[in-house]
Image (cartoon, rainbow over all chains, first blue to last red; front, side):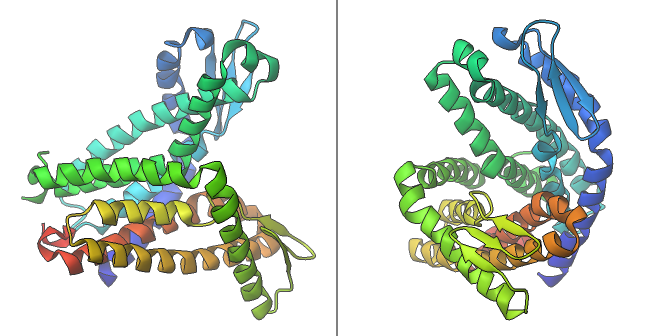
Length: 174
Length: 169
């Protein structure tokens, strides 16, 4: 268990470095992918997501208010994912790396969903009169709750479940 | 990637319990009468620890303040999210109920002890190395807290059900 703990700390250190260095580039992939999904909501159909360093700005050519999303605060759970996969036996073997690759895809999808939730929550409760005009009380409460759940426990729940499933599945463990 | 039925059941129950427990601690009454007093007590313990290492601070509610820096311990920083996480995992796991409850209680105590170290270290970073405060506050310590929760869960599973422990799969 001590060895696993040391591998966890090594994975954590590596994860912090990767997250810190790769976030600006990652946001350039995250923003357009999320924008496609975001346009499903007609209220935000004109939103344009512009990545800039560690943030993603929501802009538009329409009267839609602008917003700034701290995207790095939605993606740092990748650090835990890398640390957990580092704890597995022989972490560099192919099956472990394949599991990690699949988990990273799952994580990317969760990041898109997390960013959508954060944008919806921002526009539902933090845009003053615009929010009141476009979101009802129930919708505003839903998005705010969804954001809290995702940011406090959901983003780590996704990591744990992905790691657990991909480290314990028959194809990986055999 | 094919999971055994028991593992699939574990993941589903874990997800349901995680959301249910988190929803419970965000209920207004629970927040006001349980979470807030608990967080204030945590601030007092952390303040006492800082005074013990000759870092003079005073505590007012959930705020720890010194002459150069102050931190307000809020939801997400009181360690309850990691406690909720490990409790959901342990209670979802296939093991005798008594062992699950004892494991969850022990993990909660250990995680909150770790959280005192987190608060003390973050305060010290805020005073002496403010440039890295946000990185540690957000990325490093949150990951360490949830990592510790996962480790406690792994240690516990290796004791209560060795055949299900990750190291043996």
